[in-house]
Image (cartoon, rainbow, N blue to C red; front, top):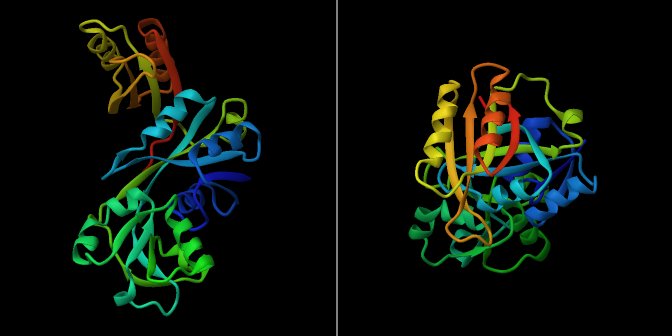
Length: 274
């Protein structure tokens, strides 16, 4: 199986792909849009993509792509994220003046940078990608922040572990496939969770009315978030995750949303991460 990720080998997405699917062929993509393109042109069979972090919140770009692209969510995973300071072997802590990593990772290590004001946090496209760059280019006075997994792949060295501000740092990942190939790769686990996107009429009580009908089905709404509609100021699309009590509940949810909303997309049915 070919699995597309945004980032390099040794990244959080790579580790999430292994936990979901075991060792597979990884298709590394520099930007998120390339991940979806790799599914569309069959360079990859499935994709594993971060969708939400317990500290940083939602990955807004990925929600927008989920809505725009013909993909289905097949599974979810929660991955504990740990950050380490990684260097070219032989580099001392005292010599470091610049630290490369993904901007989200940098923002999760504020206490470390407050304790080391001589080190400038510098955005890079990927955590593991910063380690790969470090070992290829060997820039002076430079370190990276990534998982320790990256050191084993690229031959780098760990100077310090546990840089994250909060030890309960968890990222939620989706496993995706195109709608045409979804059944080919769907895990053989009973689904008990559903993700949807919908837009309601811009009038008083419209959202409340929809949510009341969903509540009457006995669903447990675990998450709701709004995103602006491109080209339509002050109108919003709602992204909702819900747990459902019986196998036929998702069909009833879809029926209600199709009738009550002027836009509806089912993002996927899958087993909730344990």
